[in-house]
Amino acid sequence: MYINYNMDQLILPMDLETMIPEHHVSRTIHQQVEAIPEIDIQKWQTAEGRPSYHPKMMLKVILYAYSQGVTSGRKIASMTQENIP
Image 1 (cartoon, one colour):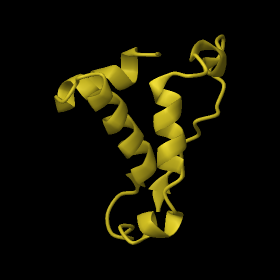
Image 2: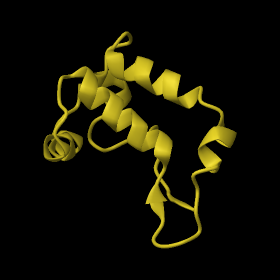
Image 3: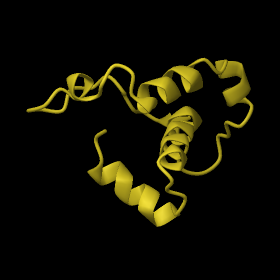
Image 4: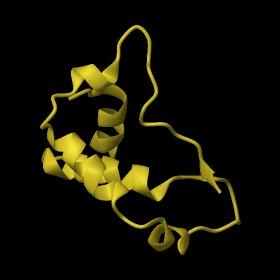
C-alpha cells in the first residue's frame, strides 16, 4: 500500500499546470515515468511497515533533481518544498 498522491491537484490560489511550460523537462520526466508498466512497480510493494510513497513519484523527484544537477538528499528534500519550475 502506498501513500496517496495526486499530480493533478489544484493548489489554491495557483494552478500549477499553467505555471509549468509545455516543453519543460519535468513534463518529459512525468511522461516517461508514467510509461513504466505498473506490474514492474508492484513487485517492490510490501505490506510490512508504514505505507510508502509511490515509487513512480519518488523516481520523478530524483530524476528531476538529478537533471538540475542536485544530488544531495537534503537539497532534493528542500527542492520538493520550494521549487516550482
